Image 1 (cartoon, one colour):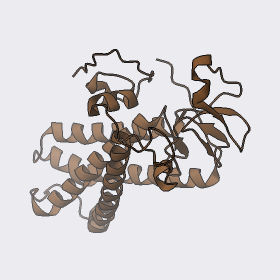
Image 2 (cartoon, one colour):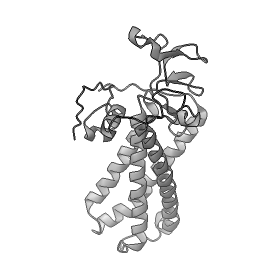
Image 3 (cartoon, helix red, strand yellow):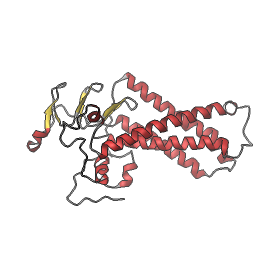
Image 4 (cartoon, helix red, strand yellow):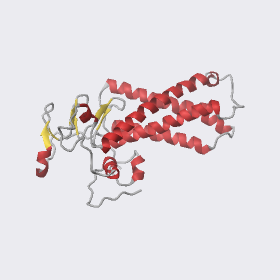
Length: 269
């Protein structure tokens, strides 16, 4: 598996992604330390619950790393344009390079991106044709981890049995309520924000409309964009994720290849 890394030099983007990483690190440390591990030691919860939380945390961080470092679909300086597709290309007015229609020039990254959806400062990268699937994974796993965190914070005070072996003089024990409240606020904000973003992203994908096209009201000007799609939802998502194997739609640590479908499309579970 060969994964190319793509980095954007943008101090504001570095600050935003650092905030996202700090939120992930806070919950991935304090929730197990305050809730999961003490209750596991006293036999209140099964070990599978602890493993599940760490897996959700690991997949969330893997999706964040891949989405922020994957090439979104940057066009080369001298692209090869097949003769049969020349009508589907146009000249960029900002970098004076040929690009496929529905590409967009990102002012922050300084280059054109194929089927660019938007530039996301929270991952310090564009979301385009080649990494849109990773951005969807990031939204999904962030929702899972945030909801998991909220459930554990709630259970800590309203469901789990009281801890008997906890050192009440320790720093985290004395400030447990404040630490858990901060975790719950973070989880609530991240879950609400990512749920809304995930919904809008899925709606755009299923209607074949990018965020830029929505904002610029291009749906009536670009043929085939924003007018809906005759493809099934399975084929549409398979094209985004680069595979018909649905189980691979949830794996961030892999490469993606464009798909070409025969007349009879079939997906695999």
